[in-house]
Picture 1: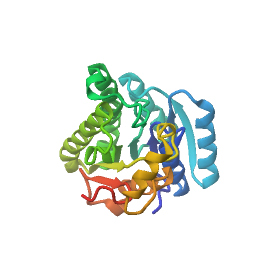
Picture 2: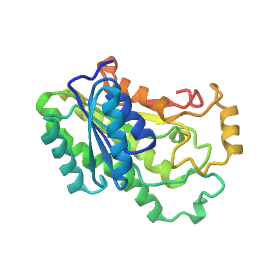
Picture 3: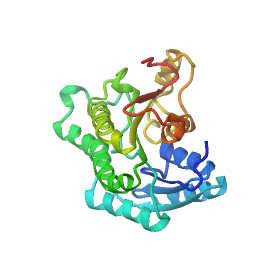
Length: 255
């Protein structure tokens, strides 16, 4: 699987899953645009890692929930690298995956849903609209949206987060249906709990162990485990796949 000559934009790529995805693309010789929100130092480290892995990379700061910023980011990628081939919508609103501290439905506000919706569907919406003219011009392109296995197995009812990710699945499938005739594919990757990441840092060891015991592969995903399926969906190896949700959770969800 080689991405030499291809340009990939990964949002929320300064840490965790996004950073692992960026490094994996670079290891396959892609040029990677590493989007980040605040941590310039972490993004610079990911860029350095990408270059060391054998690809090229550059960092782009921007809040992808803002439509003007999203459009500007895509244009910066095209200006810097000359093209864009793959968009990975990984950025999402900050969330703590802590079963003991989660909000029950009675305590969840509508504003919480809206915040997560803006972070997941809103960011993807703005970026997809921005890349679409570039993809259509060349009659090709791949979009990979990061969702969650919670949309099929809400083992912990994170109401606002999971509802937003479920909406992102619907968004992706509608987009896949419309854009397929133009040679543009849209798919989703749905990880289970990924550890360690900033979001999962508050998940207690006891819960992690319980989750591992109920997972056929008997462990949790690492950020690197998620990267491979993303690359697969972005590559010609999955050229006849669109509108799909690929679960990466050690077999917990068997669709």
